[in-house]
Amino acid sequence: MILVCGEALIDLFIGASGPTGFPAQAVAGGSPFNVAIGIGRLGRPSAFLSTLSDDVFGSFLAEKLAESGVSPAYIRRCPNYTTLSVVATNASGQPQYSFYAPNSADRALTPEALPAQLPADVNAIAAGSYALGVEPIATAIETLLRREAGSRVISLDPNVRPRVVGDLTGYRERFERLLAHVDVVKASDEDVELLYSTHDLASAARTWLQRGPKLVIVTRGEKGPMAVFGGTVLERPAPRIEVVDTVGAGDTFHAGLLSWLDANNMLTPEGIAGLTEAQVTTALDFAAAAAAIVCTRRGANPPTWNEVEQFMAARA
Image (cartoon, rainbow, N blue to C red; front, side, top):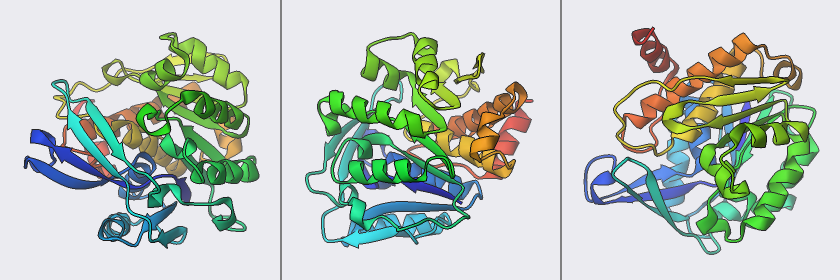
């Protein structure tokens, strides 16, 4: 089982960007939430660790997780309101976010509320996004990842959101501390630029690799993903599609990557360390196909495993 940790919120799409085409549409969202949904849609066992509100939006989020087969075993409920993210997409389909989240439910998880231990069937933990930069959940997640490192795969996606975390100095410091405890880093080219003000993606990935991870992947939009592992830098093309919007594309890539590794019995610390170039190539192509499908739809609407296979077969 893959345990995903972090925020869950409501994306309020405005203008013509809503998934249904209406002027405004409320959609379940949040980067880790999308990852958990994506893994569930792909048919792999998953669970979500976070705090959801007792309000109507919190119940809506819980229902969406259940619909995708995501276990609620690690979800806590609280009276704090659900975070609201207002989303508008620009002419190229890139989302622009504004967050309304003071004292919200998804940042309320405390270290004391963490499960005392995880069962053996949890073989991986995925975390990231602004939950690494707001308290108390940031300390809770760091505590969990440090505690579980080495016994199961840790996958980290910075998914930087400056408008939520503010000054990125503390965020970057926590991310760099965690590198010593993670096996996989999945980041975007925008994350690298925001954290380090550089476009030299390979150099940034190599630096991260030296600090502990065994596999670093940087997604680059239409240029396709790049993976750095061992002494190898591997680049793969992105599928050619008509982009509707890119909301949830990176999260779906992360879900696709972990799901493929899990389905092929490689989602263990030893499995990640021993990945071959052929295996990484296949994993990247699967994850990129899943992300491409999302880009042909409004909002974060991850595909099923069969949809990804059909998409890839049609382009073979």
